[in-house]
Image (cartoon, rainbow, N blue to C red):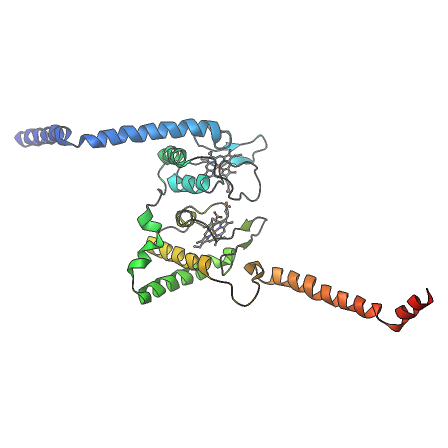
Length: 275
Ligand code: HEC
Ligand code: HEC
């Protein structure tokens, strides 16, 4: 009995001591978070609830088609990616939901992300240290080349099937396409891998650890800088555009040449002379 009493007393004392000495900042932080979540909910009800539901639970239309999926557990990273690239709010439901002009400013996007994150645990927005390729500047030349090489290997294994070997993108089965990856911000590349938008796979940290994701980003940056070698790249889309090029320019010039020959034969000359 005495032991129990001592234990209870100990617990009560630690509790009071903690309450007395705990940094007041923590409580303030919680209030600020709640304000951000409330602001996000306001924005959500106006701009997103029509498709995603009043509580982000998802909405089916009368025919049972999905207007918008449930957002419970997609995490702040998904919102930051979808809203930050202008994909959301979606305007026209369809096979493809391309990036477009961004509708919300940074602070509003943060509020929306905080609201959705509060619906259920999911991947958070990565901090700059996690995704930025700036760390390459601190490496030796060999280390940097090795990191970019690893990034390329990971890209070739995991991404080229859809985005093409040079990140130029390509058609997807059942309509739609995987977009060109040039000019996408480092944060959005990281978040795309984290959250797998639409038909793209999710690359969890178990699958591609954060430091390897950063190497993929470092590799993609080299594509942005790379000059095009050997004449026209034709969009780098491979056989389709090259075939079209050969067809239009190649066959077109043959036809033109044939017409030119025909126009200079004796028969046409004779015709002109008679006329
Ligand atoms: C199964 C096919 C597929 C694979 C594999 C795939 N992606 Fe994607 N990716 C897509 C599609 C489709 C989209 C467009 C999604 C949308 O618009 O909602 C996309 C979008 C993206 C975007 C956003 C581009 C933009 O314009 O905002 C990035 C970045 C990206 N992918 C990077 C990657 C990386 C890096 C890998 C490999 C680790 C990868 N993807 C693997 C299909 C794929
Ligand atoms: C017109 C309907 C519509 C509106 C409005 C809309 N969405 Fe969406 N949203 C969709 C659909 C449909 C998808 C699935 C898209 C896909 O797979 O490419 C989606 C997907 C998403 C995703 C990705 C979920 C995942 O699994 O990764 C997020 C996050 C999201 N929406 C957030 C928002 C936010 C935030 C807003 C308001 C600013 C919004 N949406 C407005 C229809 C809508």
